Amino acid sequence: MKGGRSAVDLWVGIFVAIGIGAILFLALKVGNLVTFGSTEGYRLEARFDNIGSLKVRAPVKASGVVVGRVERIRFDAKTYQAVVTLKIDHAYPFTTDTIASILTSGLLGEVYVGLDAGGDTAMLPDGGKIAKTQSAIVLEKMIGQFLFDKAAPSGGK
Amino acid sequence: MLSSPVAGIADALRRLGAGSIAAIARLGYAARFAVAVGRESPTAFARLHLTIREIYFAGVLSLIIIAVSGMFVGMVLALQGYDVLQRYRSDESLGVLVALSLVRELGPVVSGLLFASRAGSAITAEIGLMKATEQLSAMEMMAVDPLARVVAPRFWGGVISMPLLAALFSTMGIFGAYLVGVRLIDIDVGAFWSNMKAAVDFRYDILNGIIKSVVFGVAVSMIAVFEGFDASPTAEGVSSATTRTVVESSLAILALDFVLTVFMFRGISQT
Image 1: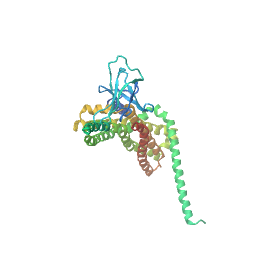
Image 2 (image 1 turned 120 degrees about the vertical axis):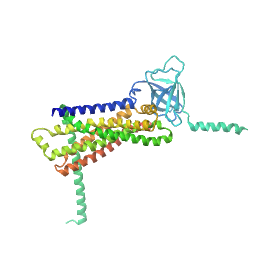
Image 3 (image 1 turned 90 degrees about the horizontal axis):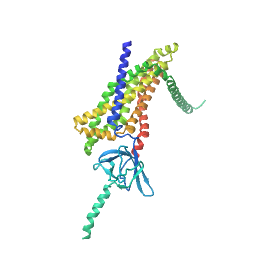
Image 4 (image 1 turned 30 degrees about the vertical axis):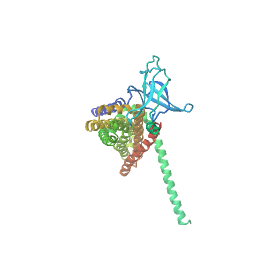
């Protein structure tokens, strides 16, 4: 009987260890628990004329590296602009003349916010505002612009 | 003397009323039973070896079926997902597709269904047979509370086993998808893992999946011990109680899954 119970204990121990190992695997290897915690970081605010199809939790990238995530998107009814709150990892400070632009990875890929640091020496504080922004490129508008530009010279002739 | 159609309607209404009262009474009994199990739960942890024995029966013996089905579900998901994704030239997203479907939905739900039919039915049959052979009455005669000695350890054994099994299911599924996607179809191994890692969030996806599996574990274990305890003490009673456990827990898992999904994931897709 004693041997039976210790065998059961051993198997349950193995089972619990496998289960916890599976949760750890999911958290570390499948999820992004370590690479970017969702609690740590400072906030930056950027105003865009058009954010395209940017969504909350979209990545914020600098030189292609994920440095944060989009935390909140709201519409400012006074300036008719979209106000995007970015949460950036503490490890990455950005200069005050940083340019924020809304980009797409590939033609059908995900929309993200790209940050390009400038040459300024002062860094943006927590809650700081990014002054220079570049809106999303809306494909329909671009095609429309292209057709308009093409049509204009030939119409003038 | 009433005319016969009126008597027929009254009879039908009486039967409807009796059925409703019986259903509500059973629901009340089940709720009181759940509270009583909760009250006796400290014994399940004070005498831990009883609970450990039940984790062995509910969890360890379900390991093989959970691991094998998880792996096959992952492999099939990878094959089917690749077939659609490659039409849009986004086959690098295969890891994302498989990981999100497994961690959010299939892991908790399918392992919950398997757990209900593998472990839940066994718990019901065991407790029902104990009742039919008057072992439970014998315990009461010896001043041993069957709720504390028999029911609570089985309930907590199931509750503890279920999230671990669901996590194992998802892990094996992702491993199966890796085998098919990277080894068989030859998707780039770096894109497979890094896209997955970039898209799966710990709090939104993994933690919500674990919460789901805990809720399913509580529901299945409670239904299993209640049906066993409530079974008519006959051979037919035990057999129909076992069937009821599987049917009720499967329906409970699917219904709870819908409700939980609405609360957990609706906000994300809207923003």
